[in-house]
Amino acid sequence: MPEAGRVRTTGSREVYRNPWIRVREDEVELADGSTGVYGVVEKAHFALVIAAERDGFWLVEQYRHPVARRTWEFPQGTWSTGAGGTPEQLARAELAEETGLRAASLRHLGHLDLAPGQSTQEFDVWLATGLTPGPTAREVTEAGMETAFVTEAELRAMVRDGRFTDAPSLAGYGLLLLDRT
Image (tube, rainbow, N blue to C red; front, side):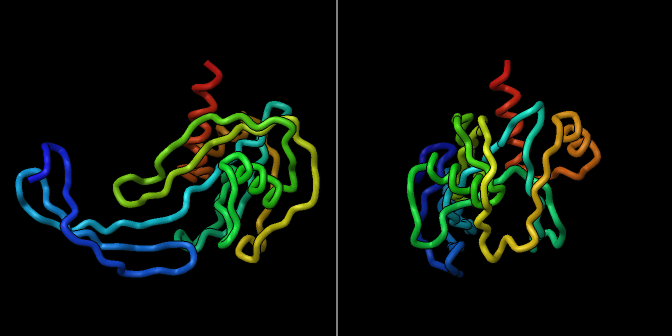
């Protein structure tokens, strides 16, 4: 029997896989001896970059199929299939790819779990400063992506009125606020 608060996996099977995601179903035994099933989504870790200058931030807006609407968020993403590198290299690559910006300074603000009750995915939050413009290199799935600069006051208004709802971006902004104290 597992120790209190722990779950023991007694079996596992892959339910679905594509190049970006794997879903598995785990048979488990709970601390009280009862059994159950957990659905687990496996996704690669990603980087989220808060590109800051002039008392504001660079955001991207893109269509997100699962919610069937466009969303504003901080630049974020993971390595393309076959690519790889350090978390900092990923942050620099995502910032350049989505916004065209290059950062003179990149500082790690924290490491977070995306949704630990359902997914293995984690992410690192980076603060990018000393920004210089350059060309974007967006992937096909990022067609139609827009980039905009907003002041911090505008970002706060977007959060309050429901125009900025991306949870990882909000968590990253929370880490930035904590970093300032």
